Amino acid sequence: MSVKKVILGDTEFFKGVSRVTYEGNESDNPFAFKYYDPERVVAGRKMVDHFKFAIAYWHTFCGTGGDPFGLATKDFPWLSSGDPYQRAKDKMDAAFEFITKIGAPYYCFHDFDLIDEGDSLQESGKRLQFITDYAQEKQDESGVGLLWGTANLFSNPRYMNGAATNPDFNVVAYAGAQVKNALDATIRLGGENYVFWGGREGYMSLLNTDMKKELDHMGRFLHMAKDYARSQGFKGNFFIEPKPMEPSKHQYDFDAATVIGFLREYDLMDDFKLNLEFNHATLAQHTMQHEVQVAANAGLLGSMDANRGDYQNGWDTDQFPNNVYELVEVMLILLETGGLQGGGINFDAKTRRNSTDLNDIFYAHIGGMDAFARALIVADKILESSNYKSLRNERYSSFGSVEGKAFEQGRSTLQDIAAFAASHGDPEKISGRQELFENIINQYL
Ligand code: XLS
Ligand code: NI
Ligand code: NI
Image 1: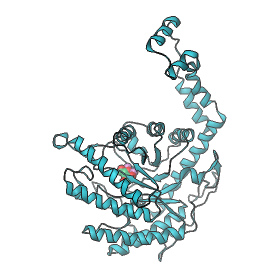
Image 2 (image 1 turned 180 degrees about the horizontal axis):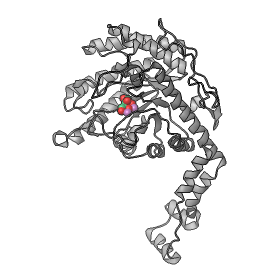
Image 3 (image 1 turned 30 degrees about the vertical axis):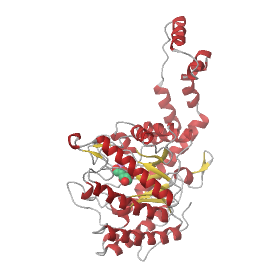
Image 4 (image 1 turned 180 degrees about the vertical axis):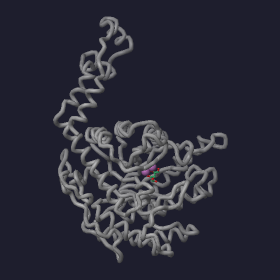
């Protein structure tokens, strides 16, 4: 899928910026890509298809910079109408103007990013249908697709004790109604995937929590959602997005390994994969590389939420990704394991609270897309031209011996390898040469 043309509503919101194009790294134009060239083929695929970049509706068009210590700082002109329906249309005009100007082939949303929640389930459903119709028009005009939809099951106070894992069945059922509507919208808009991020699916204190019961409920809920979507013809993937904490003290979808265990236990492996987020990985005390590798090992690497954390702050700062060295490590794994299954790269990132110009939104996304593009090019070169793979393989070469193979293939016993050890004496010290591996990335950057 690629963007057909720039789509303007009645008002042009991002005045003075036209379609962002690739100009190469000699260009000084801050509104041009230096590395992201959608048509360029790397490792057998166009860049546009490697990444499937998506714009996150919530941060980019709804996030006005408020934090626990202060009010909104960003005066988004598309939020000025007093009428929720008109405001939603204006916001969508701004969104499609930005998405088509930046040339992203996809976007992602929560139900109530698109339009404000109403004061009853009925009114909310009506609103969502209204804006889904409008989104359909916008998508058709532009060629932009929906990478994934989701339901916001964490902002409304009714979810303070959880959504699918709420101890009150009334709330669980309400969450079900909301997910049903969000699935309907996603399906109608040709959404390729559907995400569950369980911000409030967890606990604040185990003293008042029956964890086993709550996890069983979550398993049931996900089965129901999946069965409903399949019955409506949805062919895409469901993704679970792990995060260890924030807003809950402990979230059930802690990290990739935990989610994979959950999916196995509740028999959801056939329909669900993972949507991994950089800043969530680091909150779980992992690197993103670790999370990506864990998911790929299980064949469940679905999609990514791109951002970065902060070395000093311990929370989800959701900054735009710019650490090319780190991204190269991620792209190496992606290229070696066959890439994302069904998903793409969604910029779940926000400009800083004091980045108050509309142009900042362009700089941020251009920077992020360029960082990924550069990392892809470098990772491909490393795999194609350096001795990276052979150096790593060499570390495992002793498993190529007769005894090593017998071990790997399950043909030897503990007595066998004990006898092998007895006849071979103390192993030699073999360096892991970490610094040498690290230098390879720098050499190709
Ligand atoms: C929050 C999550 C959220 C999900 C979608 O930390 O990243 O934005 O991506 O609900
Ligand atoms: Ni996310
Ligand atoms: Ni996040």
